[in-house]
Length: 352
Image (cartoon, rainbow, N blue to C red; front, side, top):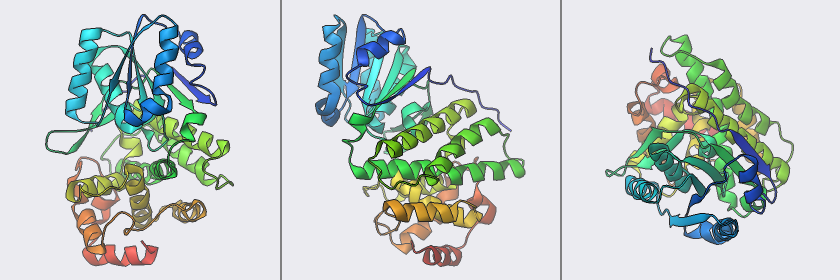
């Protein structure tokens, strides 16, 4: 069994309101003041806070450069790497969604400077993880293990500006951990992998806590704080394990299979794994299935194949071929090998 090498955890997490307004104080507090800073954002995030950060840091007499990231692909990573090597910043700040943060983490990890992650949405658990998902030249998303961000700053005032759909995707990504942890423990039972129970408890705890929330107001501070803490814990679990395994099981295999066979669709990652997790938890006889379905219904999480633009035939193809994705990871799909008829019956039973 392969042993994974742990990755250093983020050194600080700042979560609350008006964090961007106090950015200079936060950087000072954590001894991240430097003469040269690189800010990465995209066209949208530049408008909702990127320019404010730029002006604020320049008022501190820092040399600050700004560069736009338009996709999380090899081309963008290489371009940012070249900029870092030319400008030699002491600090890289990623301000944006998953694509911006993935490029910032990997480019900084490959070249040396510390990286601070400032997410503008809570759509997935990449904000504090050592994993960057980068699309290669064949249009295939590839997960890279790199350094986790040195620090994470989550400004709830910024997060509340995110589309509701993106927050829902974050819910789906966090709930999907309950499927992934089951699969990891199954692999242990089958003596396919070693286990670090601390990592699994972290990955599982965020989803557990979310299911216990009484409020269904996803834009409320209480909901967002719970979601943010859960996604951060998921990132920490990946650092401890050294791979994405504690937060990636059969539900992620199905999502990656969707990406492969139906790449022109527009489903968000968190939506895909969140819906797939209902199917995989049913296969697992997972004790969290009933609570997850009730929670989805309470907050209005879209939980149908139609929402993802998939037919039953499409989904059957996706699930049947999902075992080809990361075959070294043993999951309920490898364990049960559901047939076409079994997949169709389960989808009908779940009302997907």
